[in-house]
Length: 105
Image (cartoon, rainbow, N blue to C red; front, side):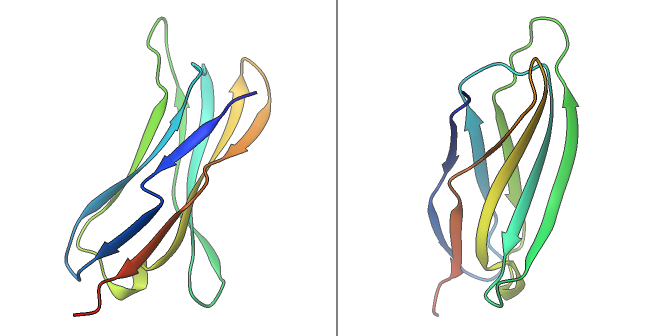
């Protein structure tokens, strides 16, 4: 059982700000695919990034970071990470999500 923590749970940014969302899990995984999704205010889900990662030898990778640069109104919504573990076992796990809103100026 792999527990996933996503931080922060909520963000309020101004237009043009940059930030990071972290997806952290507690166990070392040899090979996995991580995808980040955004559910916008129209309730449409779209993928914002996806990578296949293979961790060699003793390196223990337990974190992935989504960087939002120069935030715009189109970036607002609910972000979550999905990890599809391939090695050492097959499993799909999700982050708890991050709500991202623009500050009212």
